[in-house]
Image 1 (tube, rainbow, N blue to C red):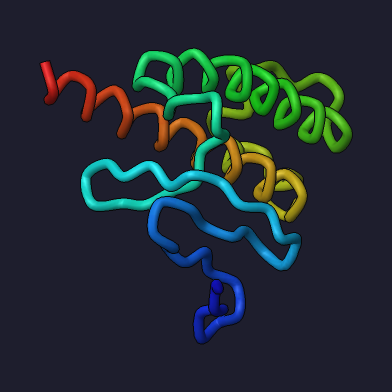
Image 2: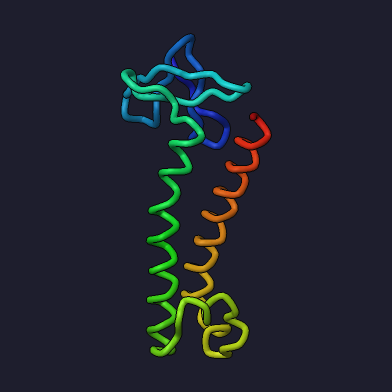
Length: 122
């Protein structure tokens, strides 16, 4: 039987299966590089190249969202303008712009880290 972690949310390893959340779902555990994570029974973990392909549309969509958020404040902005938001005081004071821009920054950081790991592995 699975026990909840001290914080009440973790997935614990149970032999070769884990129970997720409180839903009673049991999924196999995949182990790689010391990490345990659940995978669907008929799937393998994604390769690095597949993860990069997955990140590309997410990044493109987030770039569009950042530009749309900026254009709600300043309609004439271009994609190049939002690369330097400090040039536009109204954007500097817009928390929703910084939130969306931060999500984009995180996606780009993940992409760069993954590329570096893949290059290192070659």
